[in-house]
Image 1 (spheres, rainbow, N blue to C red):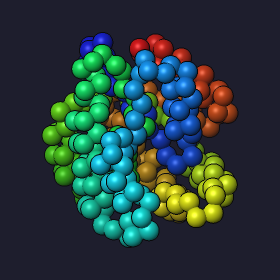
Image 2: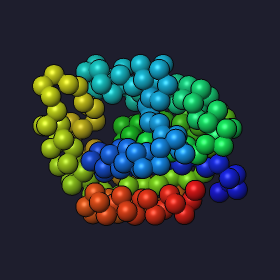
Image 3: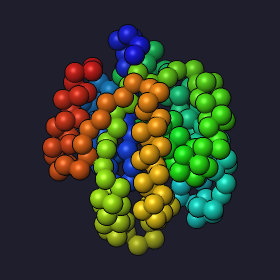
Image 4: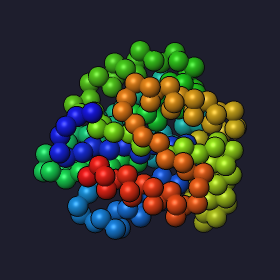
Length: 211
């Protein structure tokens, strides 16, 4: 791990792991002492790419190559225009998803490893790399159950991520992809099968020890 005092931390996890809600809760508690962002998204242009890649109905059938490159396009914009400037100011950054998601979803689950070389080449061009990844480890069946429950409660007409609609076999492959990626980078794991309050306690304690 880098010894830089200002940390760039990534939280990752499959659908229904609860990471996004927990990060929002942490942000409410810590306020402007940290910067939180998400992927794809974070900057105005990256949010446009997010809409195209995971909200647009046409995105579900697009080739993995297209999605992977669009995800990195959004990532570059977020890193250059939001993440790097914050780190230079001494503000720690925690992002909801980063390149581990691209590896798990596009490289492993969608392309069955065919895009491995392209992924690492694109990653190499990033001006900064995360200090640590925190994996919210949830059983895929439980995660999809939670995601489906969440989607049923959405206001009619609101669009949600098309990845939620994939079969359980796909989400099992996603988890395999995460574990494969984490063999190559520094990471810690949180049991996300617990209650959301317990998961938040574990996450908060881990962040406090890091920051």
